[in-house]
Length: 249
Ligand SMILES: [Zn+2]
Image 1: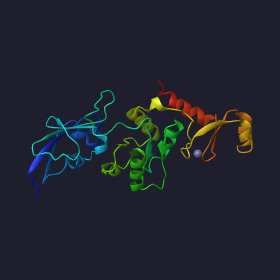
Image 2: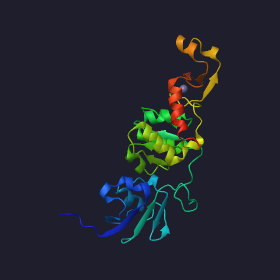
Image 3: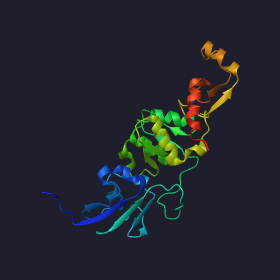
Image 4: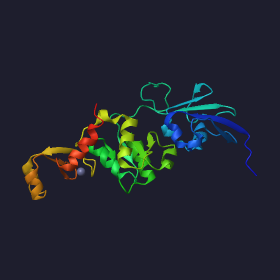
């Protein structure tokens, strides 16, 4: 026998929040049934939409926060991050720290490397658990980027974003666009291996640390001040430069 709910709300999702719905359900009011007095966060997340991607919640015309408990018959409007409209005062969380800094889940190693190449402060480790990621994000004001929506439902998550694409280059484009990251690019200032600071070094410093042919062919070298990784202006450097220049302003 189907469950008979006593009460219903209508949930209206705006913009890219529709990405979390099946294609046939997008851009339509979602009728959600419930018992008792759930919070608006619980009702919205029952649709699969993580609270961290919602920046403004309006119930029957009034802004509310996630702990609000709506009555049956309410209309709940959920708005995503606004890029051009200031909603400070009614937004659900303070602005991101700038420049934005991130912590990534274990599925996003290539994206982590791309962000670091562009100088974006990005923590990533294959050994991070969900709890590690939540703790790091909370302690350091970091934004969680993930392909695992579950972590973004956690009430401890303040800033986060579910990566829609699976291809790392498309993921990079998606994050740059969503967080307006191009303004913060400092290519080759960070180590892709460890997130440490990379500085230019004299050619003589790396003489015995890079292959002989590399030393002969290239003249500009950089080194990570944390792990010692050496970088030079080779084909890889050019690929990243091309990738970044597509976003420069
Ligand atoms: Zn390093």
